[in-house]
Image (cartoon, rainbow, N blue to C red; front, top):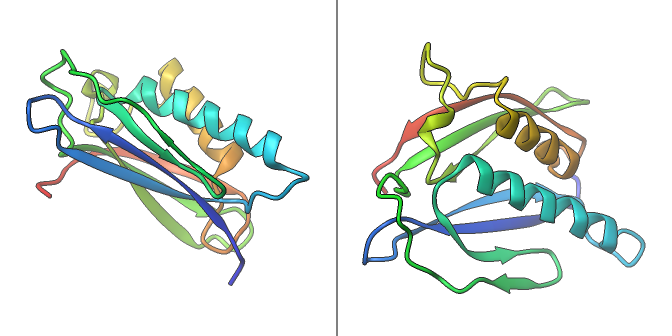
Length: 155
């Protein structure tokens, strides 16, 4: 099994309880030679996740450090941690499948014909590019997004 790092983004939902949920994504291990490039890719991925969700970021954990973000009140009642994007992807080399869930999905980005994200939406396209640029497949190779589906979880 390949050695890998991870990045974890935590989002909070709407309401006074400040419920939180996280998405953990396997990424390349950060070393001196790639830390600037990896940080740039992770910053972009965080931005793109922010554009396809409604929650507010409260934490950003990376291989070498953790970024805490002050929790602020959200004004979008639909920002619920139970509404998630299920990102299904595979390892480009081995084909082995994996998945992650991203909380507080923005349901305005749903394809009008079903429960999947509109893969032509500019924010979804940008998210996929950012995810594939930084995420690793289960065997440590490049990750390729297969689809993004809306799921509701009562966690």
